[in-house]
Length: 588
Image 1 (cartoon, rainbow, N blue to C red):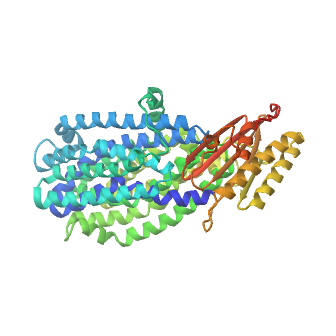
Image 2 (cartoon, rainbow, N blue to C red):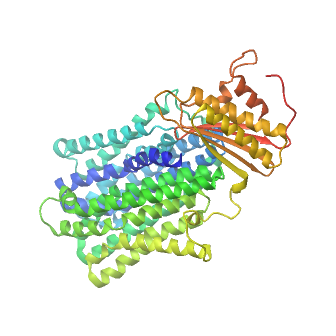
Image 3 (cartoon, rainbow, N blue to C red):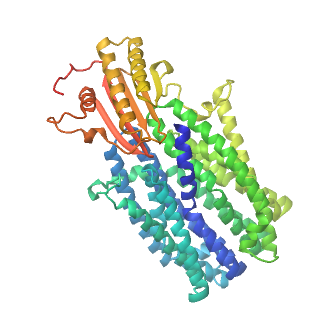
């Protein structure tokens, strides 16, 4: 089931990663074609501040994934709703503050970023900042809503939001160029308005009665907002490191080949970031699923997740990298037609950039898995090393040896060296033992349930449901439980699995049901996970005068604790029974 989840999520995560870069990509095409090299240079100088705005959005988005993955993994819908309400409120408040600050201080900010204090490039940098920041509430809001769409299984709507945003940005950019002649301010404003289109498409679901999340002002708490920001801190390290890298490389290139090199770097980062959505998507899947599986203490699931993501990293990294290297002249030509020094530099840089996609995908899978499993400090160290320390070091050293042409190695060498450092760390942690997918997770030795205390089964038919119940009963007996308690476990498994097969598995459709039985610390936990239509057995059960749903009602009577959540297009039901169970209740 892990492979199916990864396949379902990865395409949507990759598309969602384009929610920011696609507008910037379109802007760069329009800027390069209609406003020239000075416009591209202005965008390059503005880019670090744009990344800071993106860092705030990514921080909240990652915080949502961490905090809500934890609540979903523990089966608490109430805590998930608190996270949703607090995230929406925090996104609105922070984005409005950012918008006001950048509009008021845009000229000093343009100077601080390196665009100077006068001249055409300075003015265009200031204008673009003013136009773009008007979309901060939209861009931050869009990224914060993305993980909730994923959790609700609304990948189709997510793709529709991105397509709507893209179409709006293209149309508004063309209006700016041919009708309003708004220059760089108009280009930034076009992106700003297109982000609001994406949010409006998303609101079709979030304002509907079918939304599984419930916004409430009362659910907004400072404690939950703090949790969201703390949970997203590693992503801030990632974005801040990128800001440092872009700022430093801009100045290294300015010192070697001037505005042409800065313009080429601007193009390289725009195209590269769009191509790099594969690693961002892999990282998003890794963070969300690892958080859920970690809080379920599912060691097997985590191992399968990392193995699946590693294979996807190799496939996507090689495929997209080869396409990027081969198509570099065509891609750069879309932005800068004709021959120029900036175009030649951008083509060479893009080909070298392509070589770093494979290690970048693997690095993102690993560092986000570490964040999801609670190794926050390690994630932060990897982010700073990968995003700033090694790339800037490579750019600085090679600029001294080979000039601008060597600077373009910053990404490929930075990613490859980071991956080597992770391998060395894991090898040291293994202390001579053989490396495996599980060893790269760096889990505690006592994490999860021992293999002998865990029973996992896949159910597809009524006969398999009955067999799963028999195996669960024998599993309990083998662990020294009484016949009476073992029968309880068996009955829970048979009733819930059979109901899922009978009423959830629709004719002509392929469905999956995973049943997990585990014991730890005197408590037995049953987990049922299926990909059928959303069904909450806790709130569905009718009143005591009704005679239907007897099996479900019986299970609820026997359970010491029962929790249900619907996430990632999956029904997740957790039933806990203590070994010292209460006497049987007969008022069914």
